[in-house]
Every structure is written in C-alpha cells, then in structure tokens.
Image 1: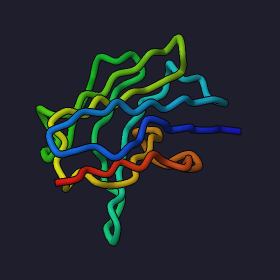
Image 2: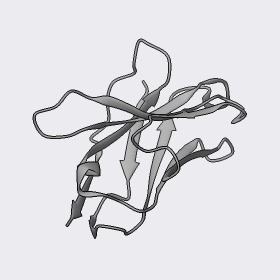
Image 3: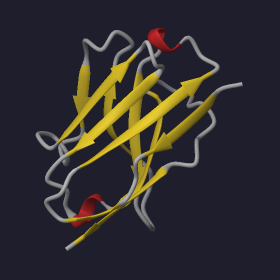
Length: 116
C-alpha cells in the first residue's frame, strides 16, 4: 500500500517562506519521479514542480519558477518543496504524488495560506 504524508503547511505573510515535506512509503522511492501539486479553492489541481528519481531533472510551473525549489532525499524517501517569496495566489492545499500518471492514492495534503 502506497502512503504519502505531507507536512509543513502553515499561515504565512506575503513574502515569507515555507518548506513542505512529503514522506512516501510502500514504493521503491529512488526509482520514482515525484511531483508537487496544489489545489486552490474552486480550481483544478495543478502541477507545481517535479523531480526525477535521481534528482537530476527538475521542472517547475511558470507561476513558481524562481521562487520554489523541489528536492529529494532518497535515503529518507522524502521529497521537499521550498517556497520563497510567497504570494496570496499561492494559497492552496499542496500534495505530493508521482510525476507520471496514474497517480497513487492522494494524501491529506498540506494547507498553505498566504496573507496579504
């Protein structure tokens, strides 16, 4: 059974920073490309950034490029999302999952709220 557990969400002022973590279990983590997604109220879930199994290939949505950084620690089966210079439009529930479809069962997500 695949389990994904996100953490690190919080309420933060605009311009602030947060780091989200996602621990995966039940998969051979180092061979799986991972990604962060987010879903804002009333909107569809969107891809934020992704990272290959070995960490050598990383990509970002245009809306977060230069502000967010995806990384991973395969010894801990954990993927991270460092978010800097947060904006109110970054407010959403953030999820991790594998980069390539089909997705695993979704975790509970991490709520990020950015106040203006």
